[in-house]
Structures are given as structure tokens and as C-alpha cells.
Image (tube, rainbow, N blue to C red; front, side, top):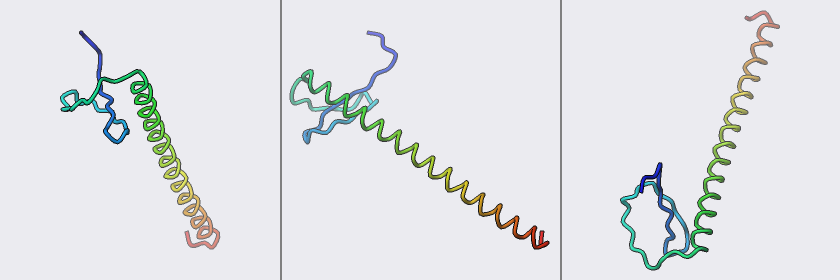
Length: 87
């Protein structure tokens, strides 16, 4: 069968799911997946990916705001120095 891409979603013994693109991952499969395993596994992986995306967005925003605050402070200092005739 020809496919564009592939990955594996697997359920650990503790009930948590993980995904991997390494199709050579050795797995000891205890039982065949049921429909609910597939549903919950896909849902858990999607939630993890969405949380990861959200975390990256927050970090980017915080870094952006931090940079803006630094720029405002530098601008204020520059203005005071210009007002005093130092610059």
C-alpha cells in the first residue's frame, strides 16, 4: 500500500498514549486495539499537540511583550537624556 506519511499511536501499560514517526519502533502488543482505544488515543494526542501549540504561543507572546517593555524603557531613558541635553 502506498501512503504519503505514517505514524504510530500506542497505548502504554499505564493507560497513557504516545505517538511516534519511527515506524521501526519495537512494540510488544498485548491485545488488538478496539475502537475506543483508537478514539481516546487520537483525542489524547490531539490534546497534547494543542497544549504544546498553546504553550509555544504563550512563550512567544511573553517574549514579545518583554522585548516591547525593554524597548519602552530604553526609549524613556533616551528621551530623558535628550531632555537634559546629554544626548
